[in-house]
Length: 197
Image (cartoon, rainbow, N blue to C red; front, side):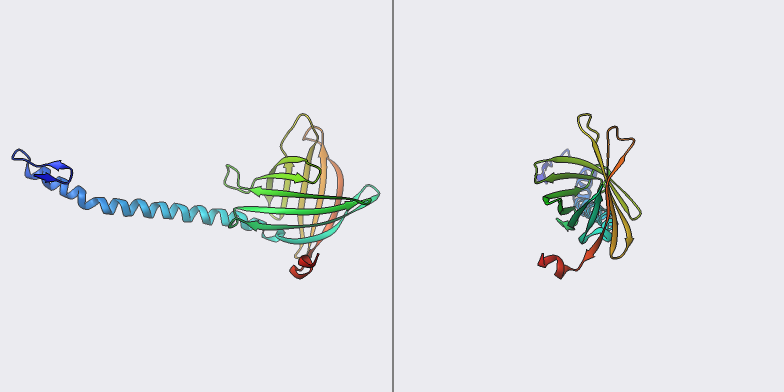
């Protein structure tokens, strides 16, 4: 006689049969426990990623302002938006100085540390740059990953109040000593004003 996947014959003991029956009864419970643990882990990871994304809440939105570059003024407008269920943040920026216009985009994403600590930059000139990010309170710093063949850049956003942020762009040859390239402030734009542009 076949019992489950096991043949039962005259030599099969009652204790062996009972053991098999017990294991079969426990199997659904084990499956349920594994499923619950998987769901709990997924929920925890989701909550963890949301908590990390929320560190950026004060910077999310549309902004417009000016940067001082030596004796010139740079007009800047940009937006930061959550995408893919808060798994990434996308920044789109348009700037103009001395009649020259440039557009760029930064995609901010989760690094191995489970934080929004990585970014990749693209611009209309064909440049691509990888950034490491550090969020400290209401200051967010983008620093280019070290490259011996080019200057390193550092972009800093600082919270001033609910409608104003400060921004600063610096460059460095060695990644230790940075020199100010541009600095300015931006004002938050209403959604209606941002969409009309």
